[in-house]
Length: 457
Ligand code: SF4
Image (cartoon, rainbow, N blue to C red):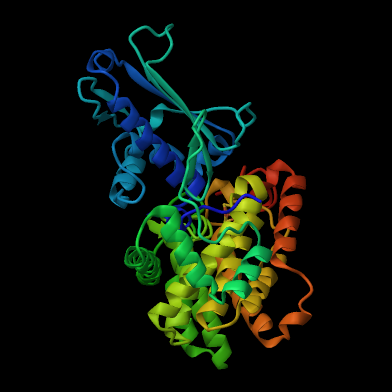
């Protein structure tokens, strides 16, 4: 069994939306290419004559709507996803033909988003979301000075063709499935959060204080996205003319007749808020992706404000959520381009259900049952963003994912745990086979479902 050796901070990445595969990944690729190019000898760089940026597959199909062109150019201009100010992306969107200097030392080049080539949807690379970056020399018939093929593999992760296998530290607690996690918890007597913390320290070399500080930064960025979304009004970018709703939902939640209506309205408003920030291209946290970046922040704020959970319980909940996200990424996928929306909203909902159960002190079996129930009822969910924009159905889906997570948590914590018949490993396996059988037009290409039946403008 291959043990999971991922870092929590690979899963929860802070950066600009609206799509971890289409913005964070390509921006990271652009930044990586710039870093690599800067290492070329000065004599080579002085002959640099241009850049060629080509997008393939789903990056080409929905890259305009997602702002992939802006993201990769921002990376080439020296911005990494975590620190890129939203104003940089807004400026690139406002002046797509303006050529901006690429700082390559002796080789001064300029680039604009209009230079980005949207290539074929069908290609030979092993990953749908592929981009190829080339640094061209003076002779257009000669091979490029530098070339790298990148794969944006979901959740903001990138890999490049020929990349050597990364050797992370060895986890203390080797697990590849939920059954292993359950067994380790039973054998050691430690809970999922402690297990995850010890693994994180072993894999990354960070100490406990650094991991906790990182979790606090993630929770703070999530809450900042909710707060910004609740305060904002107006229309989201793009041709859909979609009005922000989070503030209205939040204020409407005050006047509901039943207390439960109010709580649900608030949960939806929180999810809308972060998802609308994502759609605006502002800073969010992949959880596990940008498209699903509203569900866990909504759950975290709900835990704080409605269930009065202390911060340590939130950190524990986030670690349990990460365990579920790891299992999905390790055994299936968290990319809409690979598994459809079940892999994004479905996995995020399962993570949020686990977070709710863990943060409220439930044992591991209930944490698992909550996650399983949430994911089970997202199986088969397709990815069909209208016009290629992460707006319709994505924003509402975040609210529905948060509500399902809460319902799954209620069911799991009220039922007798041993009576639960379906395991998390089984539902993840079902997600894999469902995703494999799903027609590719339902996997982030904007060519099926609502993307076809709803006009984009
Ligand atoms: S439909 Fe789902 S998977 Fe597709 S872009 Fe929207 S949130 Fe992501």
